Image (cartoon, rainbow, N blue to C red; front, top):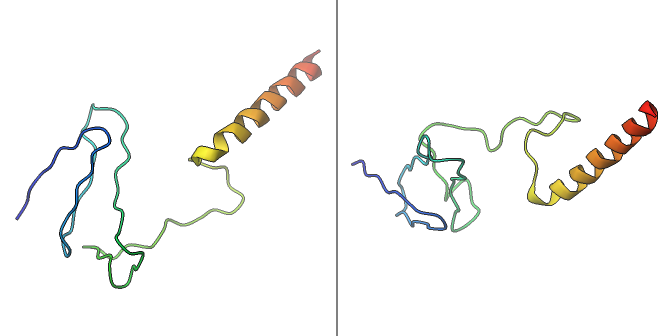
Length: 92
């Protein structure tokens, strides 16, 4: 049985256990964050996946970040401003 649900900003949906949902944003509608919040954090008993997937993507140690956490933006902005000031001093 397949069904679709379109959610608006700030809306959520509760799904019954043992379903394999597919979350996605509609093309041309902007950037969205979609995902699942589990009732309990028990990957062995609570979360089920249609295909066997790793718990998290591989991590490249000491690599540049591709995404920032919300609380990292202020630090990055400060570092960028300091680097720009240093560059201006060097260029004189």
